[in-house]
Amino acid sequence: MLSGFRRGLLCALLLLSSPPQFAAPPHFAQVTPGHPLTLPQDSGAHPDFRTEWWYVTGWLNTPDGKPIGFQITFFRSATEHDRANPSAFAPTQLIIAHAALSDPGVGKLLHAQKSARAGFGLAYAKEGNTDVALDDWRLLRGADGRYQASIATGEFTLQLSLTPGQPPLLQGDQGYSRKGPQAAQASYYYSEPQLQVSGKLTRAGREQDVSGNAWLDHEWSTSVLDADATGWDWLGANLDDGSALMAFQIRNRSGDKIWAHAALRDASGKVTQFPPEQVSFQPERHWRSPRTDASYPVQQALHTGVNAGSGTGAGAIVWSLVPLQDDQELDSRLSTGSVYWEGAVTVNRDGRRAGHGYLELTGYLKALKF
Image 1 (tube, rainbow, N blue to C red):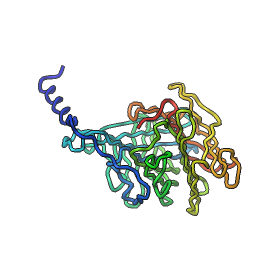
Image 2: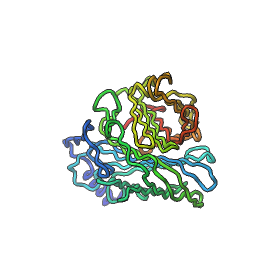
Image 3: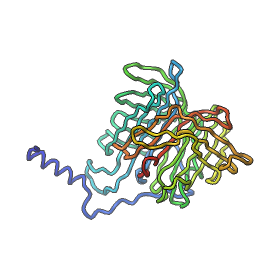
Image 4: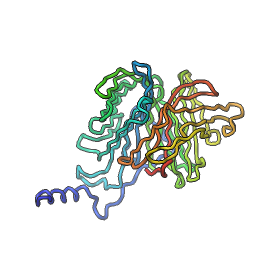
């Protein structure tokens, strides 16, 4: 039972943090073509857009030679709350974070999630440079472009340094990335492939030195998906020859492709863009989750190039995506409200080993909602 003082205080806080009855919803900025990205300034937060994320995925090498996949993600989500509300408790921005390890020795994903309203120095996404934090989880970009990531969960701790070896890769048309047939269905999007990783991994009180490479995605938008879209398949892969491959497709409720795109940057820096008709994800094997009963196409053939759907024609490439382990499902219903598969995969090109990366599969349990 609340005392009179505590009940009064709680009511006051709720009133302060609630929008006025007739407050107008905020006007969110829109993604438009022809808007150049400016780095490193655009590596920071963009609070006038509805949704934003910093996504780090990679492979770690341990002293015993066994590979481990890892994921660190920070989301910023702007709410419909009145921006004019002066209360420090007003939830105008939400910060959400996910972290995961993929270790075949464990057999399933180890993961954790957090969420909080931005404020009080405990949860934030700063403008002008990558600096996002949620309690003791943080991703910070230094003046030299190097990232420091700190994650501590109940099952593992990551202290990683990620050093760029290549310039950022602006996705789509110089960072304007279409996600559907309408021009407004787009995001601002760049990647940092081939990040060199070093640091420490701690599990069960045992600390290990680790090294490897990673891929960072930074993306922000307001209106991304077509009304009929349910989710996407996405790949970010660091190739052994120094190349970088990104590909995605947006699926509708029938499982058909609404939109797709791919970009391949070779070791010399030359970028080849593949339009929707030249990108095709073809499932080769499914895995069914024993927890959610969702069925995911965890092994796929990605076709890029001319006549990609048939895998034939000049310039066509067939990429085979094979999971490090099948069970890489992340249940984030306590934070983002979604369940998705985010997995480490090896990548073969036309039947030969080419590299490794991460495959993300969303909307296979239910339609993805931002």
